[in-house]
Amino acid sequence: MSQTSPSADFASGRLAESDAEMLAVYVAELSAAGLPLAPGLRAAAEESGGRLAAALRAMADGLDQGRSLEDVLSDPAARFPAYLQGLVRAALRTGQLGETLVDLV
Image 1 (cartoon, rainbow, N blue to C red):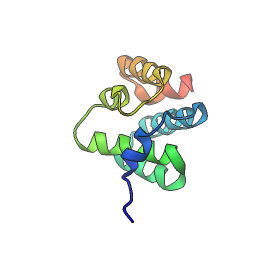
Image 2 (image 1 turned 60 degrees about the horizontal axis):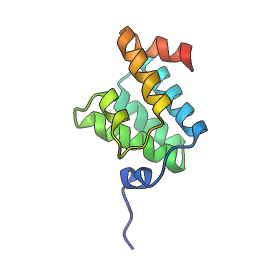
Image 3 (image 1 turned 90 degrees about the vertical axis):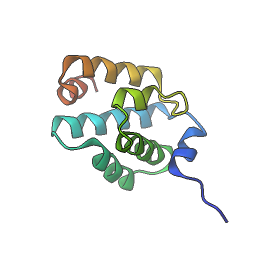
């Protein structure tokens, strides 16, 4: 029996609003703490389940491939909610991703 990759699992449907909010919280906390995002997102995926875990792994994979956070979130195949993309985009413009996202979420 073959297993699908986390990225394929995630791409099969949009994140629930509660999962999108948790994802934003993870990104905010990791950024505010100055920790590397990809390993932190993988660690968070280990504590999560379902589509959230798949989304966290997919994000980490994209970041490991050298893509920007904004690029990873705006990928149509990822199906991240538009408001989450907007939150991150706005936080990135401030130059203080972690602190801004913590305030927003």
